[in-house]
Length: 233
Image 1 (cartoon, rainbow, N blue to C red):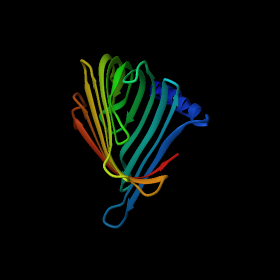
Image 2: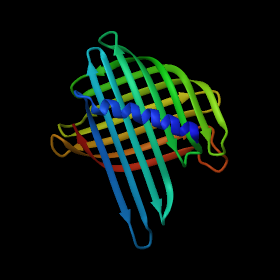
Image 3: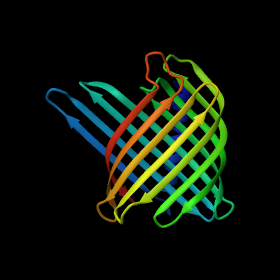
């Protein structure tokens, strides 16, 4: 618990510094829902993403929050932080480093964090379509809900794809694999974004998470569906 608090503080501090700087662009997302009557549920889904290009360097970070309750009982709670930097050594190829921290209270893990680095390639980079694929190595640290800690080297693979179907509609896909001897983590985030105007958009998203090793009373796969209002800046 103490380690999780230290890591969370460091990562949020890293996010706060670039947010105060100039020349950063990004998106903020927010989804809220509530029902009452036969069922009483509340749902919050929020995300803040920032990015800055400086010559051959690209720096970015994101913070995601998910909280869901039903009948006064919390049924889902997740905090995800990504900090990333990349350097384009050529028009198509780049090196990257990523610090990732995932605090998902209902995944079977108290937290999962990793530090990875590697190389990627811009396979497609046009006005309508972007496809980046990367691979690397790193180290992952985690703690299960029962308190058992795990530390291991991991191999990382990531695919980022966006395609603009029309002037107002885009499809999005981010696919991540972190494979280690103790656990393999796979996450797919698929989205459909429809622009309302130059700043606002609606986004439908489905995130599927898989861990090969979890506690006996937990499922290997979790699915999160959301409808968000997106503001670009």
